[in-house]
Amino acid sequence: MSKPGDYAAVRADIAALLHQPEYDDGSAGPVLVRLAWHSAGTYDAATDTGGSNGAGMRYESEGGDPANAGLQHARVFLEPVKSAHPWITYADLWTLAGVVAIREMGGPDIQWLPGRTDFTDDSKLPPRGRLPDGAQGAEHIRFIFGRMGFSDQEIVALSGAHNLGRCHSDRSGFHGAWVSNPTRMSNSYFRLLTSLDWTRKTLPNGVEQFVHHDDDLDEDLMMLPTDMALLSDPHFAPWVRTYAQDKEKFFHDFAAVFAKLVELGIQRDADGNITNADNERGGYHSAPKKSGKPALPETAGRDGEAEPLRRENMQFRARL
Image 1: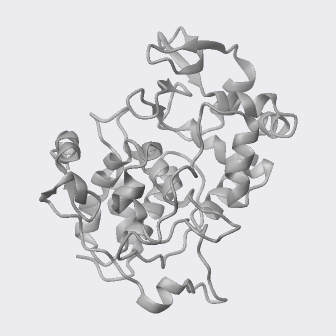
Image 2: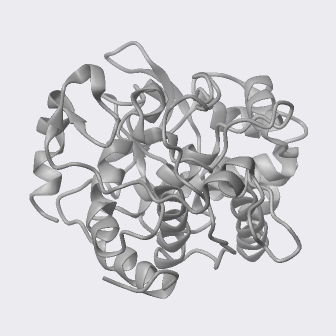
């Protein structure tokens, strides 16, 4: 076990677990980035609720949100790290994992500060419906991200995370990867979005997305309706073209906006100490490691697993 505050050791263990030959494209990196993003993306600036403090996905009301489908795999991947470093909070672990994964996949260094606490119950979790719906258009994107305090430029930069990972029809309803190398951070997402012909396609489940057949891969690359909206909106589109032409500019702006994302809902003093009420009253509260014993479905999320989720995760846990 590392000493409390040894974040370098935590970073090293996160980097070591990214190689997962049997998961998606051989890497846990993209799903860890999605975990970090979804753990913070519930923030509402008007009410100062949600955000990266609390690690709310440990509870069913947030972890069971359909928008978070599949993220149980990311949380399972990180359990050995939590076991090795029990002093770190889940809220810090999940956000740090996303930052480390981006760097290990060739992306920029992103500033990350510790200090988030884990909620002791689910009473302060935000309502569902705050995460984006990929089937919507530009106004939806602007509403969802604007609620968090992001500008149009920041929205486009953050959308560049679609360079990583793929969609699954049994989770989001969409299917496929955005780029041909979805475990390597680049500006390919923007280059492909602006340079290829995208055709609307209705999947067997009735979900509509846009596809381009890649002859080299002999498979379809895909874009969500929200991705296409970035290209058609007159305020988003100039930033899409900028990032398609300038990888360094994209990396610079992405690093800044992702650092802002994982700080949503966090208040700090001049010394960087978190001053949120939960932290001041309860201190740096690290929730215990997830129980290895499955819970009943109605108690899922309270540091245990419901039986259906336990069965689904068995194949992933067996390799850890």
